[in-house]
Image (cartoon, rainbow, N blue to C red; front, side, top):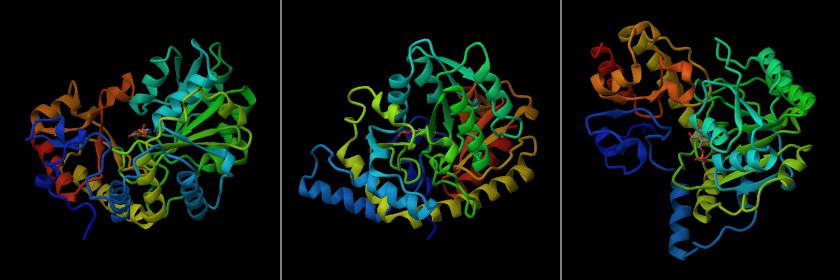
Length: 374
Ligand SMILES: Cc1ncc(COP(=O)(O)O)c(C=O)c1O
């Protein structure tokens, strides 16, 4: 039985964001929740904790050890215990790292189009954004990064998304080494969000930034939240490079206090017992990417998409359709909810982001409706 086989009727009983925000006739393919059942090991771990009343504060290094074991098995690399600490969740880890290691008024680099909270975590805390957009082919622009690092508003930090949300780029070891060298040379703190690390198409290598010798001053924010669909369970990890001790020393008070016990239990069970499951998820996502490519070619040739191996998200360029707002058009006329490109950067109003972590039948229905709406 496929993992992505839940029906629309089953999914409409959910109370979480994805299936609740829009009217019942809207197919929601937006926020990054996955339309599947939980892995039984996670269900058991959480259920056992409830039955035994194990619902106090989290303690110990179980989550960190489960991460280290996964990193060793998956990527042949193992962080030492002192390199890993608990965080509330990934965005709170990033917030703590940026607030603790930069000052108000500092500049921080991001690569639009990029996950909307990256903008908020900088501007909302009185830092300035320096935009270094991805290249036309969706990759890091190393020359533009270097120019930004040496310009008048030299940044204090660089917040990198790896793999990149929304377009799914998986950065190569060479790119990460170049980024590491640039950050070291210009004294820029490198903060890398690896929440999508395990969500990579089958056979495509993912390079954790901390396996790169040139990037040992980087700090990573990770959680099992995306890979195992555990946004309901708040927990995360900071992982620092061997040369990033001060980035940890500068973390503000309470940065390690907000992890939830149930989150820790759920994420740890996922990392320990559901590695094969997430690989199966990505086999099905890869098939959904192929399906979307065929559907677009057949039914929506005006939408252009460069599939990329990371994440279960598709970043669709609708410029050729001549719509004011593709997101609003598809919501009102097709009753399909997608993420608006403008949330990922002001220049991306002609893009929408589609979530492919759902049943093939739902993707097909969404594209049919979008085609019929034009
Ligand atoms: C790149 C990225 N970082 C962070 C998050 C959210 O993580 P958390 O809920 O742990 O803050 C998401 C969720 O989609 C994401 O795509």
